[in-house]
Image: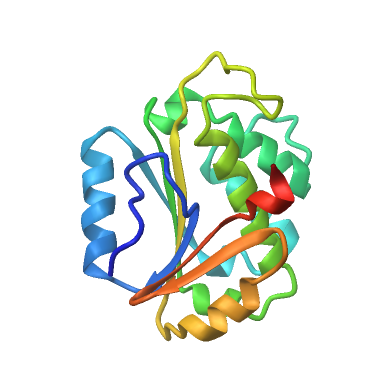
Length: 180
């Protein structure tokens, strides 16, 4: 398995892998040793849109004024405080992702994670102006017990995302033709 590195600010932003993949565990350990923060989410707490917002707000300590909608999630993922990121970044690991694959909100959820991570991993704002903070590494890893790359790629494939399938993983990032 090669083609992604969650320890740096490079695509893909969302990675789908088999549960317990050694390369992923190695990268997560390396990321934490560099000061990055690892956050685990049980897919059971992400089964619908409302629970996604509640879980992310709780785990990543979103501000009280968090709007609990997809746009607000993108904004908060882009603007995580240093206490949450360690000044380096975050890796969000969703375990048991199998139960989310057929959820109605799943493709949009993946797109929103890509949007937030794309912005966080950049040192410039949407207009191309430098931010007052460095880029931080932000990636999301969906771990599957029954890893079916073709099914995953079909489910998350949409015009706003670039989905890549390789040995042992599926990756998703924003489609530059749609977003730039």
